[in-house]
Amino acid sequence: MFTPSDRNIKNVSTADFAYQEIKEKIILGELQAEESIVEERLARLLDISRTPLREALHRLELEELVLRKLNGRLMVAPISVQEVKEIFIIRSLLEGVVVSQAAEKGTAKQISHLERLMQMFEIALEVGEIDELLYLGGQFHSYIYEMSGNKTAIKILMQLNDHIHRYRRFVPRESPEERNSLKEHKEIMKEIKGKNPEKAKRAMERHILNSLEVVVSALENERKDDHGE
Image (cartoon, rainbow, N blue to C red; front, side, top):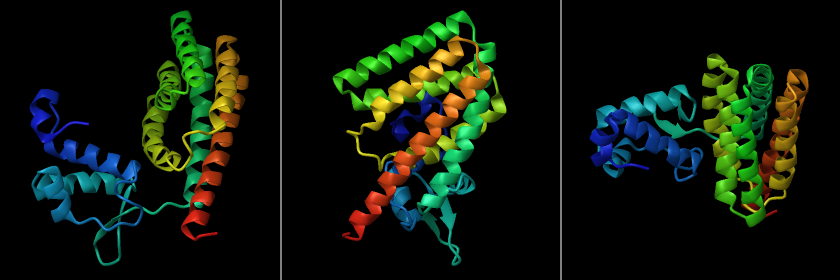
């Protein structure tokens, strides 16, 4: 995370800074679902003027992380089981496409790098480094995107992943899903290495849909807790 004083160093505009900071707060739940957006308070918190703040909020509104109410005021987008299902299903289809292309196009060097990520993922799981595990899982998928060379799919997936990260925070950190995830990643790796596009596609789709089940279960449990059930 960076502060406004870092902007010249990082060559980031004030609006870009505000966009990244607000998006992070939404994804991490620091700005909660359906919470009203108070521009004055946000501007003061980020130490910026209203103009770049509004530009940032407009971008987040286009990405549907922020919604405009009937009275014209903005709020953080709600969360719902229906939305998470839609997002993960679309993600499974798109990642199925990119992994099949990665299996077709992947060079020996790229496959070797993917294998190293997989080895690091396994080590992180064994020593219980959850943050590192999540990071390496993201890197594994991102590198498959890169291998595919499908710029359109990558662009859409990157936007979907912002929403997915928002929902994944409901999954308990100590979750048996991670060991299942290792097995699924190994299966994907095997099919990419074997140059089997169709099998890689099916393995990826199974992996994403299994993740969906975990997130939906966690979200439903969260709602039960909120209602004291």
